[in-house]
Image (cartoon, rainbow, N blue to C red; front, side, top):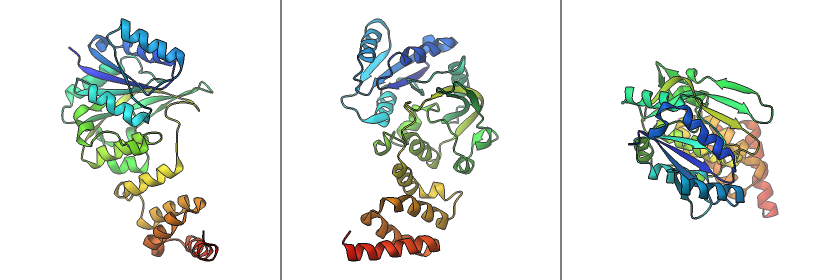
Amino acid sequence: MYKLSVIICLFNEELCLITALRSLYLNKIHKQTEVIIIDDCSTNPVTLRLLSLLEKFTTYKVIRSKQNLGLSNSRNLGFENATTPYVLPLDADDVFPERALDNIYKTFVENLDFDFIAGNYYLKDVQSGKTQVVDCSNIAISNTVDIKKLAADWKLLGTSPCKKATWQKIGGYNLKYSYSIQDVDFWIRVLSGGSKGFYLNQPIYTWNRSVTGMNMNFDRLDMIKLIEDHREFYLLNNSAAELDNKVFEAYYPYKQKSVLLPLGKLSFARLKAVNKLRLISFYFKTMFNGA
């Protein structure tokens, strides 16, 4: 009987998947670990052949997305198909450190009131080969993740283990951010919804950060949309004026009339003098140029 579930999302990661799977065997609990692999419509022949072999010769559950919908959709498919209470996301180009699964499971069963685990993690720069430990102790108070401390210094691992019930409670990952910052949006909603995170003072994950990796997509406009969607979270460490100016300055270079003018109307009183002048200038330019 499985005790926890590992969901591995991939898109053309080829043999990285084998390395990710091997890391599971460095745990005593590996035989009681459900493995679910979600393929987001890979096109690479090596990846496709590997998936076929794993599906045929192992007990791993391979799920193929009907269309490429990004990481949010893949994660949702993984959580939906998990049959255990505890779910550990793993990107196909990353690995678990030795005994990480054992320690995560032990922490969950010894701290039943908590909904997810926030641990330290290894951050390896694939290009340089350098590895550092990211210490997350400063986002917790007495082993409990503090939302205000996290808002001040976002370092929570995007693939932090959590209960399936926690994922269900907030309605899963948001497809709106499926190709960029889905993890940040997910965890803000988890914490804002009152879920509790246990800080585990040991590395629970190795993030192999690469310029071509799964976690490197970033859209500046998505970040601004995120700030707007979670205004109350970002107000924990910013004033309304600071937030409004950050949002305006992020949108301003794109010169979108349908965005800037309504935004300026709502926040004009809180804008800095330079941003007020920018808005006024933009307003008159659009009036006379018909932009």
